Image (tube, rainbow, N blue to C red; front, side, top):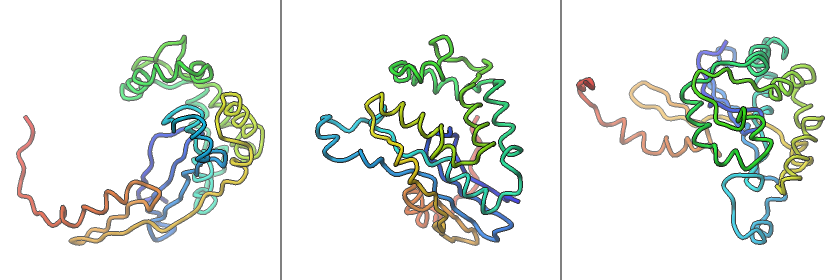
Length: 232
């Protein structure tokens, strides 16, 4: 049973790591699911391009979220994949009310998403940003999650989903290829640890940015603050 877990909102085609305090592990565990750069993402590639884009097909990394969650499930999971993914499949296939925060993200990313037909089709219903409270349906995501529930994470990295992902990136002129997906292994690692005044802090290890959070903690925690007034 998880006593606590940390993750961020993500989709299947992103990199993501899991930091969790598991009773069964008797410790804090970390699963590294942030994929590396594709093999075609070389210095020569970006010199020819004249830049290193921060978004688009040339900025894609190997999507590690599925592998990271899969490794955590294999090590400590108790439910089968179909049961585990059923709520997510239903939320994607049947739709879920969009939060104000999510709607704001789509609005801010509208110009970028509009550049790519596949992004427009999947994330901009009617070609416009969805609004807070809208029923947001992601049928393609639901089918992808259903395929993973039936066939395991392997279908995402070596099956039809992998071929579709690589083909889409290739047609867009990007750098992600089939062999990048097939060769990605998720890893379990030990989280960093900082102790202070009886508390144990376990930020994620590199490549996470949590190392930057850990560095200033000792001097910050050494400051003892008195009662603070509440905001009006």
